[in-house]
Image (cartoon, rainbow, N blue to C red):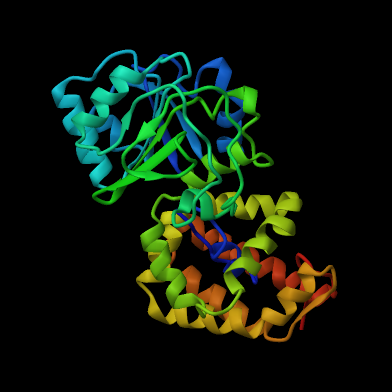
Length: 347
């Protein structure tokens, strides 16, 4: 799921932070993301702030730790109690990735798993046809990447039917309760496809990891941004093109990633902070646009941003309180010295 908040200081970052997902791996997989053929996708997830966990049993307790769960070529069919736990977890908001391979690995057991969670999707046939990525889902529309209309890199695979096409016959998905199920007819996550943040295969998986919690962040976005504006896209561009290019900016971003749910709670539980942040974002759109163009952006209301950071710190848990105070201190230092603060001149 998405997250964003704290800089024109914290505001820009917090409104650009995505939820850090815990990604679980089933130990009944022939090849999970902890296997040597999937080091690229695993590394891409970790670099994006997500957590890829060790292979575990399919139990309610283990699943409760995860937002995403990977089944890579199921070696067996889980027990009825395991399938019940998986079904409940998905419908409670979990994201299941069920992957098969071109040699038929994982197909039969994968179909049994899908039937066991009452999915409409099944795997059948060995002549899938790829099609450009469809719109209408966070997996292709992002954040962080809009890959609608682009095409998945593939090798021979299995045909997927039922649910909704995402990449022709190679990937279908469906909503089950509050959760999502993605079924793959090929190991689109294999190192062979170099699935990182620069390739369409990697961008697909990074998008899926960030589907977590979108409804709740969507509520915050609707309160923070004019739906007809480009503010959200600009702030994400600032996060990726400016903040992420410096060690200090990455430090701020990672702190927010690690506390993304808490950052969301502070906003949603304090309407006054939402209102302050919305006004500050709107007032500084021009300055932000200038920074993105490579020019100097001038902030004329630094005192109001400092007041926002004070108010945010008063409502935040310890880690976010410390971050807000750190950003405030460094903003005031830059203002006094006349030096730029991540591209902004502070008046």
